[in-house]
Length: 116
Length: 109
Image (cartoon, rainbow over all chains, first blue to last red):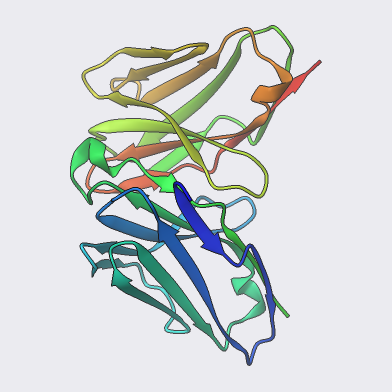
């Protein structure tokens, strides 16, 4: 496998469910990101991990919980979501974090999440 | 407040013509600017990066300009093809990377 992979590609869940999104990067990068993309809105940065430590948490509701067990894997744990959380969730990685041109992002294909 | 605007939500261009997309920003002093391409249901793909001290960058049929006085970047696709149809995002970097909303480009055969 190459690049950044995400599973599942599509997820439908009820408001009371608990699910997790998985991201894996095969690029040897040190930084990983979660973004939310809703229709007609810019990409919203949710979380950033650099060298497995969370370095940004942009006012994201606690029903979203990230986990970075190692530099290649990133999870987003979801619980008691709301219908307005339906969106495309994108994972990205970069060589480094906040270090100029090394911040170029490499994105996965995304998980299309629908909350009923 | 900081703002990034891409000229239009959607742009239709005849095949073979040059497509020009605009990215304007306010209250930023970006160190550099990036352009990404996003196809439906896919993640964005990095295309080009231009630094604040560079006026122009080229890659094959793509050209990017960066005018820090006008606070604007232009993204050109020459000899456009239907396969160029996608959403194009600009992203600015000062302390962190921030994306614009994107322009959906359609090349009409």
